[in-house]
Image (cartoon, rainbow, N blue to C red; front, side, top):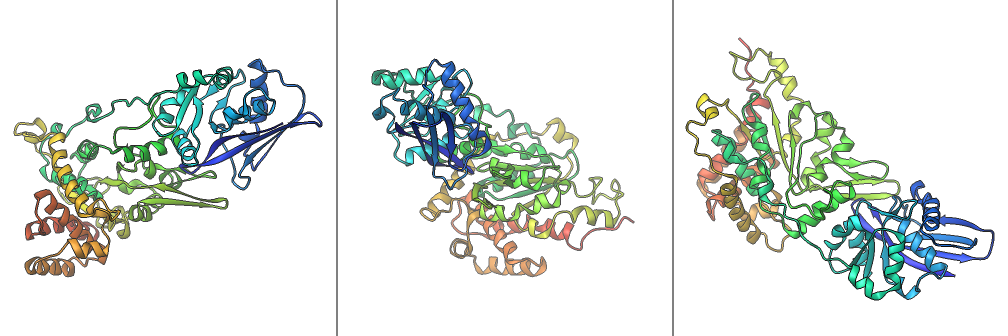
Length: 517
């Protein structure tokens, strides 16, 4: 007897529908699986056979053939165990074929028949829903994850026996179908706040501008000046996630098996801070079966690179294209995968090996030592950073909070959200959401300058030896500063502040390094 059920496989972070066909017929008894399968999928043969036996299903010795289609895509993972078992049971006539015709199955089987959770359920169920499936059986541990997709009936099961009981009783099928319950995971869960950060008005202002326009930012200053403290508070002033952003982020974490237990969707923006020993592949993603890297895990959130020059040069340079295109494409012989990389890059570094340059009373690094240290950051990578801010050492009064009147993250976030709303209206229908994403045409259209501002920018372009990209970065940042002020036109004060955030390139990476005298 022939039967067919449906399941799904993973390619990158996206799912694709898979037909699981089973045939039980005459011939030499055996269990054969075909369809371009990885080793863990082939091992499903023994897991399924043993799970069916231990669940009390008696199957006469027959020739069993299972095919996973399409046969030109390599299937991996353990999520095909449950659909294989369902197809074999249907082929033996143990359940009603009409009940499983529009059903999909996802799950790993234990030898005792228990259905175990798998990764990537958000992507798998989304693919099945888009393929027209009406119902999906999932491990009970993945129930909320499946329900978060919507517009498809989700049934959570604990073991094979429960699955067969539900399939045999349509009334029970309705009872076992769950409803998505959204867990709270909002701003109240942040353990840090900008109100705890005393002094350092410049770094607070630069961080606010960076978040408002999604501009990459570099903090440069001596040890203990507040670089990491500011960076770790960036998520607290970012707007709350939309449902679409939640799904995008959660898909990446689901595929990587990193969703918190019992959670279907992440409610906070990611903050990733990889160690400087990270490899290029771990940063951008890859592997034989490509998986997302740190830049994708940080998508829609913050990728914080502390001790910026200490990272391997290859790990930094591999970020150049993703930062520009906001996606990562990993190509392999069997195909390519595209991962999201829509991040706000925040980097922090000391100005020299000892950390105290240009204070020549404390810094004893030679000119060559400083140049070599700073030279670990290439100019092309620097040009992809919109805002560079130098941080002065904190005073005693700042540390003690004597003069502190610190704004909370909530107050700063209100201004950021107002600027974000201006940008959404400006770019409505264009596929652009923030000033940092503008192309040449949008810069010409929305960053118009008066005669005085034009003359100022011309002088800055010539004196600072700006590239075309650097010129556009200044205009984009100036546009964001104007949006924060609620101004329709970029004024001289906005342009001066934006130019000031490019001064460090010439001071530290140009010809301005002082010699220890």
